[in-house]
Length: 170
Image 1 (cartoon, helix red, strand yellow):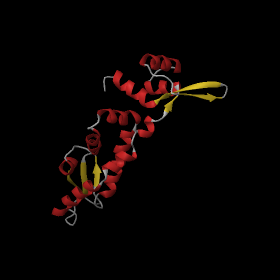
Image 2 (cartoon, one colour):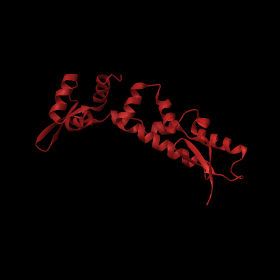
Image 3 (cartoon, rainbow, N blue to C red):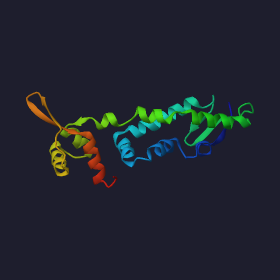
Image 4 (cartoon, one colour):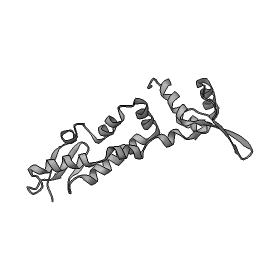
């Protein structure tokens, strides 16, 4: 059975406590964008992709477990330059590419039905969503014929931003 040892905590190499903090620090310059990433689910995807990229970049047999870097307790691994290799691996991950890959621009350009707005806002019915949107001054940006009915579509960006404002986040 191979013995393992802790090569250090993530903070030692990256200056932040966990991989999720790397993504958070990248997004921290724009609170509104950051909130939209969280609300859209893109933030979780960014963290997951960053963690996967980090795991792939780390030296063989070194793994990230929570905030600790763990590897074999073998003299041939545990050398002075292993810490440099870990730091280089962490630095080699292109965080910008991960952020750009999950940009919320596509989500913000979407148009939502009243049912989708209700689900997003946690309301019980599309009628409640339409009343909320009316109160917020958000009008349909498009009407689409679906079967025999005409369905209103609402701009996702305005819905998300008003939701943030009303929650005191913007």
